[in-house]
Length: 398
Length: 102
Image (cartoon, rainbow over all chains, first blue to last red; front, side):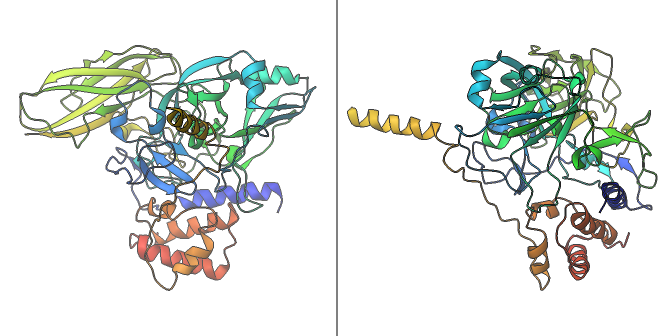
């Protein structure tokens, strides 16, 4: 099969997956009723578990009250079924090759000793986080809103590594691959691609997460960190950096993880966008960590609403709270800004004066003035990406 | 005293060696209904993913499930025969269907 046919086929298969011409197209609140598993994975507390092979773990709502997500609560998302479970640090290396002056074989030890060490505190979010919001069901795992977290990473600049290898006029793109592998030889690897001129100084190859070695399930021993970008390009267990002059076509760049390339970033199942572009920068979003729908509260008690907010890197200006279904909004108190790419915590105190059902809404606004839309205002897209609706939590007060 | 130091040393060394030992990946059974076609699911789906992927999709139309099976065959290269394509679609629609053809 010719490459062109492959992509044509991919497009047909994915577009026809979205059937249901008679079904209503809408966006609603993502699912919020999943229970954590009674089984814990290595270095993780029990999390919402969608699959063990490859592992897909989601962080429950109650974890989102702090700026840093503990390592044992951070979500997990792999694509390939084969993940090496035996890594010898004496033989593990990142191979930098292609259009460079010097081919490099970098061990983690080399990263720690031979380069300037850099730290960044950033939000990592799956592009399909909150995908269960989209109707009709789009292709992919139907995540709630916990496929995200914020960590402090330590590592070295990707740019510094590329400089060390020596870039030439022919060095324009890099392809990134990890050590996880498909089963079928023809199945596409999870390869991602970046344009060298667009790599920021904050983009690092990280070996440490919140002061500890990277957890195995989050990409041990090294992974890429691209602040502000959705995590699909944050290649885990990074082992191969291939520098090229020409753009290389890869399944996970040219078919998957793409969004409509039009003004409203929208499409319908019947009329998919003619042009698409790779999923890149995140949009402004907030999420309530406390209370949850399971929290028991009585009237006349005090409640402190807590949550987190973030965006692509402009930073959070304010998070507004509504207790009357969006009729009026009040400012919450913001916590310390660890970085413009990090979770910014918010809190709002109130006294519960009435019994009955209380609906809490949270809406973040960033320093560029962009604010979260209501769920129903978000345009449907075929991959179920970039949901950032105003969050709501309803509780019953006794 | 000497003994406890040795034990602590042993524990520390073991912790540091966690990844050079073989990591034990947790295995979970995602149960799907059992019938004569469960074997079709076993021989086609589990090469690459657990049944968790199926359970996570919710109730869907027959066309939805057929497109999924075709996607697995054509995009992800699962060796699904024409007969198994039909049987897998029927199985998925029977247990994870929303009664709608489209």
